[in-house]
Length: 131
Image (cartoon, rainbow, N blue to C red; front, side, top):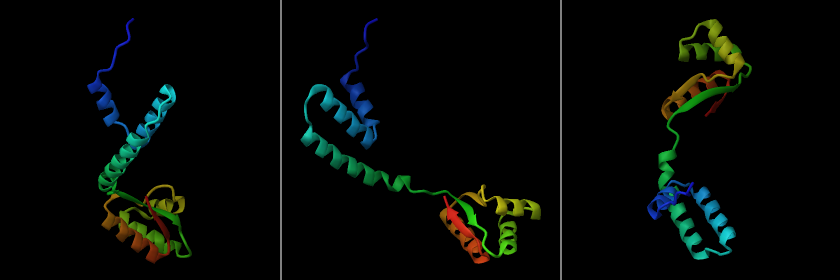
């Protein structure tokens, strides 16, 4: 079987798909394989990578949040009541949700809604974590 050669265009496309970390590892592997250094191109690639990371940062901003109870506090009944009001669950289900602390009270909520739920639960006495 003959080895299939990558065209220059295919290689460029493959490099374009790499993350900055993968690209740095690729350059390091090439340096080791061929005994060369790519000091100037690496600096340029790092600058381009930083610019690309800065441009990509807003796209990676989290838009959906889940609200988890991490501690109930002393006002367990108030927390259960608030969970019932937020989720429309029955008493038993809300109690299990509060005591279990494994499932989110609210899933995939926008930032505003998640902050509102967090504020309500913290007012009731719970400790909350947004994920």
